[in-house]
Length: 536
Image (cartoon, rainbow, N blue to C red):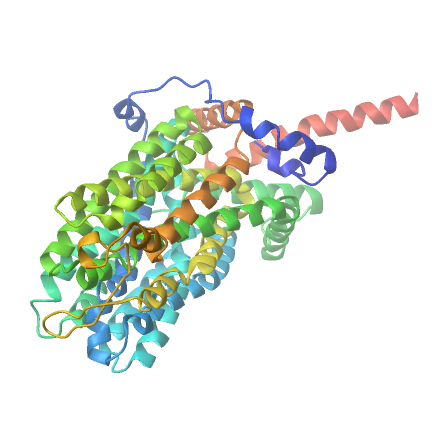
C-alpha cells in the first residue's frame, strides 16, 4: 500500500482547497463492524504476542526511569538545598534531549533493524540509572539526566515498531492503546516502588534509581532471544530487490546502503509537511501528559498536604485510569475513527480540569481517575495513528523523531508550572516546609475568598496550562489527516495476504521480492504499451 501522503500530500493549492472542507466529512466513522475485543486479540499468533510484549516492557521501563525524577522532586530538592523548580530541570533536560536519541536510533533502526539499537539503549539505561543514584550535586544530577534523555529518546521508535508493525489490522487499535499505556504502567510502578523504597530505606530517593537499573537486564536477555520483526525483514528484502533490479548488483553492502538512502530520501521528500504536522501534534500530546502528571505529586504533597502513602494512592489510581482509558479508546478508534475518538477525549478531558485541581476531599481520587482516563484515552490511538501516517521506509525514524521533537517543544512544561507556582507562595507547613500554589487554590485556603479570587486562581498554573493544551490538541487533531476507507480496506487486505503467504511457507525475503514484482509489473506493462504505440 502507498497511502495518500506519498502522493504529494498537501503541497498544491488545489489539494489545500479540497483538504480543509473535507475535515468535517472525514470524521465519519469507518464502515467497520465493532468486533468482540477477545476475538480480535485471538488473531495474534505467538510471534506477534512476543514482539508486542517486548516492546511494551521496554517502553514501560523507559517511563519508570523517567518518573523516578518526577516522584522525587521534593526529596532531591531538600537534599541539594534547592527549589523544586531547579530540580525539575532534571525533567526538562531529559525531555529536551530525547529528540537526539530518536534521530540516532531511528536512523540505525530503519537501516539495520529494531533489535540491536533497542538493546544498546537498554544498556545505557542501566548505566545512567545507577549513576543518577550516586550524584553528589544538582549539577552532576542534571548532567546524568541529560544523557539519560538521549537513551530514552532512542528507545521509543524501535520499541513501538517492534510492538506494533507485525500486528493484524483489527488488533492495532486496542493494542496501540495498551502499548501507549506502558507509559502509565511505568508511572504506576514508579509510584509503588517510590512508596516502598524512598521513605523506608536509608538512601531514600537514591534507592529508587538504583532499583530502576535492574529490570532492563532481563528485557535485554528477552530481546536477545527473540528475532527481528517480520515487517522489517520484508521491507528490507523489498528495498534490496528494487535496488538490485535497477543496478544489477545483488547482496553487496554498498547496494543495500544505497537502496536504504534512496528510499529514505524519497519518503522524506514526499512526507516532509506531514512530518512537521506530526511534530506539532506531538507537542500538544506531550504537553498534556507532562502538564497534568509531572508536578502533580509535588502539588499533592506541597499544596494539598498529602503524605507519601496518600500521594502514592492518588498517583496509582490516576495511572490505572490512564491505562483503562487508553486501551478502551484505542480499541474504539478502529471502529469510530482515530481523529474522532481523540477529539471526544479532548472535550471530556478539558471539562474535568477544574475538578482535577480544585477538589480537596476524597472525591479527588475520582477526579484524578477520570482526568487521566481521558489523558490516556486521547493518547490511545496515537501509536497506531503515527504508524499509519509514517512511510514504511522510515517508520522507526519518523515515529520516534516526531514524538521526541514534540517532547522537546513541551519539555519546559513542568519547569514553567513550578516557576509560576512559586510566584504564589502559601503559608508554610507546621514544620517550616515552603508551599506554593501549583494548582487551583481551594476557597478554604484564603480568608479573603471571593469570586474574584476564584477567577484569578482559575488562571493559575496547572488549570490554565492544561485547558489551553486540550484546546490546542482538539484543533490540530481536527485539522489533521487520516486514512480513508479505501486505504483501511487495502491495509487490512494486505495484512491478510501476508499471513496467508506465511501459512503457505513463503519466506519473508520472498514476500518482499513478490511485492516489488507486484508493484512494478503494471508499470512495466504500461511502458511496453506506450513503446508499442509509438512504434506504430
